[in-house]
Length: 323
Image 1 (cartoon, rainbow, N blue to C red):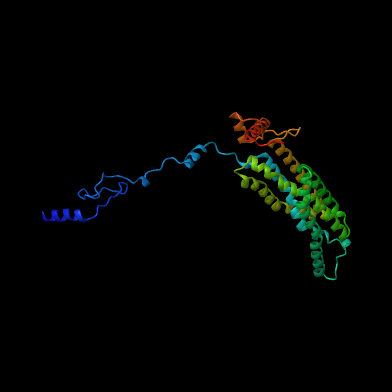
Image 2 (cartoon, helix red, strand yellow; image 1 turned 45 degrees about the horizontal axis):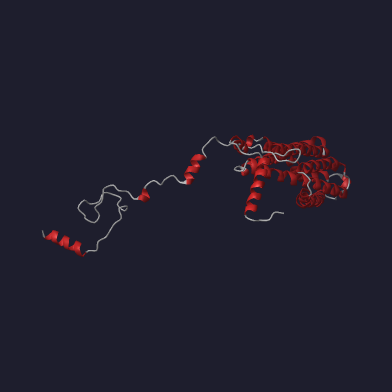
């Protein structure tokens, strides 16, 4: 009885504390008057949350897996073009020193060591025109042609043909200045070709592979890497068997093949992205556009007309003057 009186007095003087019912995580003591609550009550914070929009988005996104970029014909075509471009890259490293060993260039010295030093120095000097002109045409020249309406397909064709011809002319050079002039022309062709080839896949990847842009770029970059590993084998074998001229001819032929694949890639993406002969736009041949048409989406020209009428009607209702 004494214990009960003390406990009741303590309850009278002790401030009453209210515990929210959501705090009790386990079964409370059945005789404690302050914490007694229905057993096994869980906090609302521990309950599983309702389906969030993110969860619903994940559920809706479940479907058949996306096709692989390695099955895309235009990207494989561009990869083949980059594969043969590697012959030019590798050839620029191994062919000029071998060409300058000819006596017509007048680089012989009293000792073999000094001769090799002059050849190495001259090789670096004759490569300057190629590098400078390539960088200039690839940026300033190609952008200027694009702004004037010259198509990428034309840049690829003209640049590839010019570069290919120079590879067949280089073995005919007899002096260093002739080699510098031919290298400058070669740089102009390669700059125009590479500027167009590197710019063309950007729009195609953004429209047809918006979620796999990095994977799409990896297709043709990997093909060029494989080309750099393979190109040195035929170039050196042809030099050993038939001389430096045959090695240059192989590089020129590879540049021609690369040009053919580059033009083919340009035609393929033009047909796939849409564009009528009269300049009108057509629906791009992509999985998303096909699904949209199946669900009743408008055609391109019909949507343009609808959007123009809608904008004009909205502006007129808000008292905007149209001129």
